[in-house]
Each structure stands twice: as structure tokens, then as C-alpha cells.
Image 1: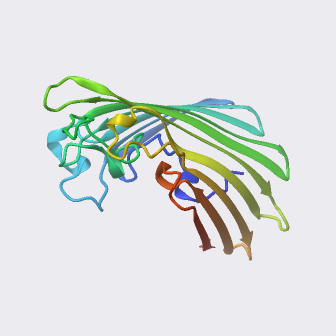
Image 2: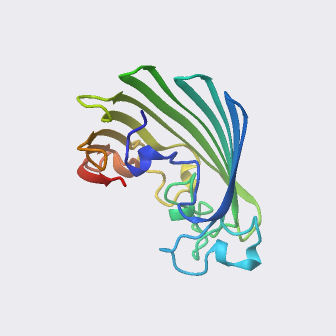
Length: 259
């Protein structure tokens, strides 16, 4: 039922700072209703300049930018799945000494020591719970809530300067087999990054008090067993947490080929 397909909808926005990398995943199915999963990833985003963590032998397993994630999954009923995740992230500052950017989650944007000064490596903790529930053959619900805590330390004094704390949540509803078997219509609402404290450490100040919100409509329609079309519409309000930023409207049409 989780057919929402935007980048923010399809994955937890605070959970993992790494889009690409090297690592491993272990899965242990303890019982039909319970499983444990652990994943480790060292960052290797090819679109970023410089030597990356996964290809730098001097940074070891837990140096550089890396994440370690654990998940407990429960399936008490055939139509209800519940998952609890914890991620421990080690975040390297960029050349300017700031934490954040493309590999900075659970921070969106950039953070410094509050006075423009550089930071040391930061260790972040992110907690997430998500679920999907299909009470009827034609109706499903899904959602998640996550909370991220990133303590920051000055590279000049070695003293802690505070923490950036943020939360994110999403709720959605899906309609399997709407108008045709194999089709899926989805409506999703989410808040990707709501700063609860530490705005003074963010270069942008965390916005002007606005909170970015996203409303998404998508519909996957199978033409045949090999081809499906998925039109999607996105409405983004208060972009980048600035209430005076204009709303953004996006239409996307995707074709999916299966062989």
C-alpha cells in the first residue's frame, strides 16, 4: 500500500545520511511474526568531490561518514506490519567545517558552531517507527514518525555547542486494485524536517518558523504484465521551512517496464 514515490515519501527523511556506499545487511527471521535486521553503510556518493569514506582505508569501519541501523519488525497479523528502527550516524564536516548537506541527515541544510566556526565529526541518533496496515482488500494505511538528535562540538575549543533536534512524520492511504487488478492509488501527507531545537546552529536558522509540508497523489496503472504508467502530483508548501516561499506544484509521469 506504500505506493508514494517521491524521494521524501519513499524513505525516512531523517533515518540515513547515505544514499550510496559500501556495506552489508544481515537479516534474522526469528519467527513468522518477528525479524531482526542490521545494516552498515560507509558513504560513497560519487557526485561529491574528494575521496569518499568507503574508498579511504585510513578511516576504518567507523571513521568518516558511516551509519549503523538496526530494525525490529513485527507482523502480529497478516495485514499489519510494525517496525522500529534505530540509526547511529557518524557525520564528517565538509571542507568549511559544517555538518549537513547531502550526507548530513538527520540535519537538513548546514550547521556550524552558531558563530560561523567549524565543527568536529558529529554522532547522530535517529529513532523511527513505521507501519502499514491493510484492513480490507481494497484499502490500506501507512505512516511513520522519526526523531533525530545531533550533538555538535566546536573544532576550535573542543566543547559542545548544543544539539540540533528534528522530527518528521508521514501518513497515507492506499487503494489497491483501483479500477484494475494490479493498480494502486496513493495519497500521502508528510513533514520531512521540523526543527524542534537548535535553530541557532543552522546556517539558515532552520527557516522563519514555517514547516515544509508535502501532499502527494500517485496512481500506478498496469497496461499489461510488462508495462505500467504512474502519473503523480506533488504539492510542496513552505519549501525549506520558509513560510514566505511560494508553494511548488509538480506533475510527473513515469513508465515502468518489467521483464
